[in-house]
Length: 195
Image (cartoon, rainbow, N blue to C red; front, top):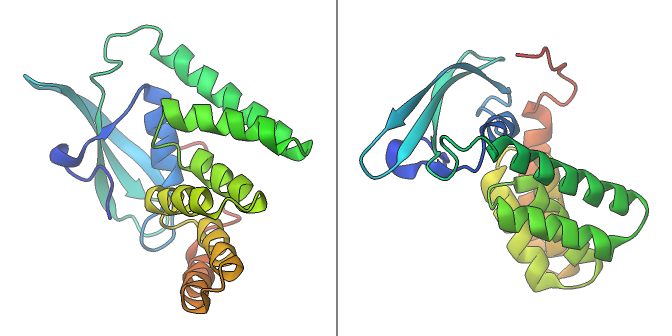
């Protein structure tokens, strides 16, 4: 699925930085990363949208990402709220590193609640739930992460691990095959040239 590909499918966004993070988290079908060429605000009667025209750095394919920016358009504090989310996510990662998964889960849960399209928060919630053997929550969060980050091999590997724990060999094999295919495509070590 191509999230935000049309105005009708515009993704709700709470800040400008979130839009850029979301675009950077998406990969082209060739495995390349996108860079923003142009963007424009499109005021409409019922909402305000923003269109980002992007191109793939690997194959030069072009596409658009549409965001509904009604929630923050004209709000001078929107970027500060994203910084709060970024700090919460960072704190959650530090707590994972420290082995405090309960505290990390609370941070990731708040990030996902405030910004439902923050795919990495769902990924980490799924991983923590899997460790805790809360397989329903793991399934929910990892499937959500896969829907938001469909080209991320790590998400598909996590799903494969979940299916293995649930003795679902068919789903495990499919998820591993997807992860292996993506691993070959994705620019894992491509330098971020600041575009």
